Every structure is written in C-alpha cells, then in structure tokens.
Amino acid sequence: MKKLLSLIFKITLALIFLLFLILALSYRSELSLEQLATEYTDEYSHFIKVDGIDMHVRVKGEGEPIFLIHGSFASLHTWEAWESELSQYFMTISMDLPGHGLTGPDELKRYGTADYADLLFQLADILGIDQFHVAGNSMGGGVALLMAASQPERILTLNLIDASGAPARRVVADTSNIDRSQAPAKSGSSSVSIIRFAQQPYFSKVLLRCTPKWLFSQNMKQVYYDDAKIQKETVTRYYKMMRREGNRQATLDRLTTRKPYQVYFEKINMPVMIIWGREDTWISVSNAERFKEVIPDAYLKIFDRTGHVPMEERPTETVAEYLSFLGIQADRDYFTAPNYYSHVFR
Image: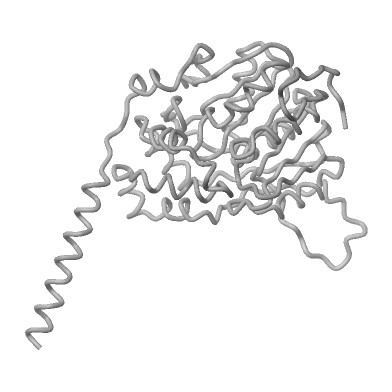
C-alpha cells in the first residue's frame, strides 16, 4: 500500500512539474504599441481620437466610403486583399476595434456590439462622412448589422460576411400571419471552443500571461477550410496583435461581459449582400439562411470549400462578387482593368 501511495505521489509531482514547465515555456510578455507600429502600419495608417480612444484606422482610395469591420480576435489587416481591389473605385476605411490590433484596450471597457457601432458612427462624423457602405465579418458583421438597423439613412449598402446576429428560428404552429421582419434579433453566446475556454475563470487568468503561438495556429485551422492557405505571416500577426499591451485583458473582459442588444430587421431598407463559407465551423451556414429569411431581398452568395473568413481565404472570388454587387464589373483574372458602371441597387 505504501509503495502504491508513493507511486501516486511521484506521478502527481511529475504532472505538477510538467504543468509548471509548460506554463513557463508558454509565458509571453506584452508588446508595446511602438514595437508593433513599426511593423504593422503604413502610409495609409492613422491614429484618430474617437471618444477618448486612439483608434488605428487605415484609409485608402477615393470615392464612396466603405467601412470594413473585422471580427473577434482579428484586426484591420484581415481586409488587406479586399482593400487593394476596392480602393481602386472606393474609399476603404478599416479600423482596429477597441481591444484589438494596434488600437488596444479601452479604459471604460466598451467592447459590446452596440459600443462598437456607436464608436464607428462617431468615427464617420469625425471623418466628415454622412453616408457609407458597410461590410463586416463575424463579430464585425454583427456590428455592421446593428449600424444598418439603428441608422439606416446613413448606410448605403450592407454586406454580412459569416456574420453574427442572425435571429433564432422560431417554431410556431401557424406562421401565416407572422411578419418575421418585426422580430428583433438578440445577441447570443458563441459555442466556439477558444471562447468557452477564455470564459473559465482559472484558465482565463493563465491566458493573460501564457499565450502559446500554437494556439493561434490551431485557431487559424478552425476558421480556414484549406490549411494550405494559412500563411505563417498571418499566424504571427494574429499572435503579436493579441500580445499588444492590454489586448489580452481586453479580450477576457469582452468575452466575459455579456452585453445584449437587439436588431430590428424591419428598419433595414438598403441593399444587402450575404457572403458565407459553406464549411464555416464557427458560425454555420444555416445562419446565412436565417438572415435570408428576415431580409428576403438580400443577395446571398455561399462559397464552397470555404471557412469562416472568406475575404482572407478566397479574396479574389469574394471581392469580385462584392464589387459586382456594388456595380463594378471586375474581371476575374484581374489582368484587365474593370469598368465602373455606378452603384447598383439589387
């Protein structure tokens, strides 16, 4: 019996030592804004004070403005390929939302969807922009959706890309007299594993200092369908942006503080495009179908063999569809300059 207890004790000590060794090897210090800015800003970058927050904003091109809103854990760099094409005909405005990228944390912890929507309208006011197109991916799609529903007179078109915020499908005995567009959509919790992990109090404290790079590699494999398209530089960028001073704490604050909001779909009166990756494992394609139910005039395009971030994984095909939606006939091979036809309402 003593030998058995001694063996159990030794195994327990070995496991504890192994755990501490893993944590020690996973420790990562924070990176300053100055360190990251030299690598992740360019001539199009600006830091604009918006309601007390120094927001990293990138502005390219001229013409009708398009606000490009990234998703959770991402940054404005997720739109780089799209910006290269869109900025030939439009003014693209991308930004790092508070708690993300180079913008970093907000002292007041305004990380809710409604907080972000209000902040972006303030950004538009500062830039002197009255009306604009808006496109958003994932969490950013939920922000874009709320913006379109809250101030529809300012939104020219709405593009939802694997977006959050789809209404739950209700089961009722007789739906013949129900106007589904009147039903508000409520924000809900995500089932994504990394988010559930971060919401656990003990593990969340570990994440504040121990952030292994392999975790981001696994995360990218979840949001991409084709692992071969994942670039090392992309993984490194996601990894470094999370280590920006204050971003890890901001991420935990954002994920552990639920801020419900409502979207009244009957107020969405502008042209709407819905882009989705059929193999999205974070927000399934059934959400695209639910959006289509409550916005029946929306143009829906589903891309096969595509995951959660179509604009990163399949930039050429997806931006061509978006340009077509906006009235631009883009040549798929991109060797011949596309023709400008003017904005088209579908």
